[in-house]
Length: 225
Image (cartoon, rainbow, N blue to C red; front, side, top):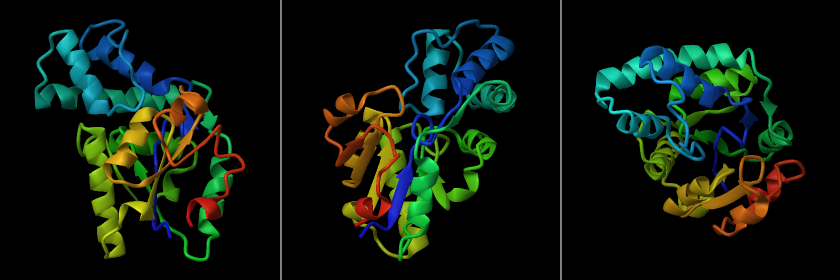
């Protein structure tokens, strides 16, 4: 039986209308005087700090703790500002799936496995009324390596449930090949959804346990057996 379900955020739970990417651009433009700093940068499945580090290296900015703080202090301001201006929404089926998890006879622990920094994740999910659905998480400011975040999320689940969770007792839900890799890292089950930038067929090539066009119609009870 599944005891822990871990969700990615962008493209899995919500679409922000590009608020995250635009907040990166605005921050580099306003704080570091670099326009279009994120051109040619792939955001899918990445951690926020790894994206910042890549941009720092490209534009010859020293990756000091002070510069990271300077970036993220401004980033969360722009993120909150842009979310209010851009059209976004929850991905298909997410609220129904979450309700299905809550209605199970033994509901699993529900958490986040995301490359967003924690405050960024909270700003995004509060905007769409989803933040309080989650009991724990592993975030981009915990580790730059997304696969190590999967290990950390498993450990935090162990601590909260006061037992060691075997891989098959965990489901990772995400919309990119990197989310599937996270699941493989901890030998969990993986539900890949085609609500982000990858099609269901593209995701299936990376061998998730299941792949679906969206969470609409996915039965939580079947996933959590």
